[in-house]
Amino acid sequence: MEKAQKKSSGKKKKLPDITNLAKRIKDLRVAKGYNSAEAFALDNQLSRTHYGRWERGSNITYINLVKLADAFDVTLE
Image (tube, rainbow, N blue to C red):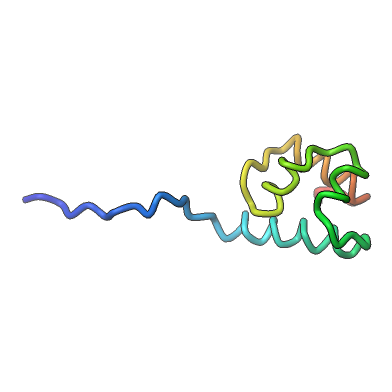
């Protein structure tokens, strides 16, 4: 018997925790008074390209979380 294969749309599904983290990152930026992700990234010496990805929930590593926590003046706890 053959198993049916699902067609992939080419997009990776994000885990709910990552999606929640991305939303939290954006909420923290807005709470600091930044309407622009680019302005926040530049003011905090972060790559604007990477920061945009982090707000979308991709390419988030532990070291990047440490950098973000520092920029937002929060801990990772």
